[in-house]
Length: 138
Image (cartoon, rainbow, N blue to C red; front, side, top):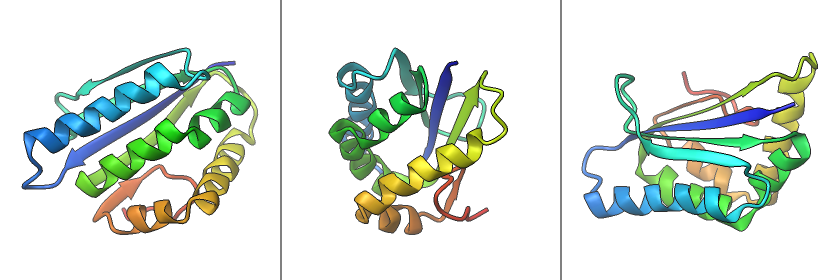
C-alpha cells in the first residue's frame, strides 16, 4: 500500500514573500526530516487557484501517524495555516480498504486532540476542505 498525502494552500492577501518562503521551507523540512516520508514534492501550484502545494508519500497508516505527530509537521502547520485563505488536504491511495477514510479521520482527530491549537488554526480559515477530523467549511 502507498498513501500520497497532499496539502494545498491559497495564501491570504498581504502575505509577504518572506512569510511564503518560510511556509515553503517548513514543507521541505517535513519531507527531509520525517523518517516516515518516503519521498515528497513541495512548491508552487499552477492552474488551480492555489499558490503552494506539497505531497508526501507514506507507506501505510502507521507512517501516516508518524508523519502527523512529528514535530516538523506540527511546526509547518503552525507556520502555514495562519497565512492561508484556503487550505485543502487530500489522500490518494491504492489501499482498497473501505474503511480507509474513516481510519485517516481517526488519525487526524487524534492529532488535533493532541495539539488543540491546530483546531483553532483550522477554524480561523475562511475555507478548508479535506481535513477529516473537522467539518469542512465548504
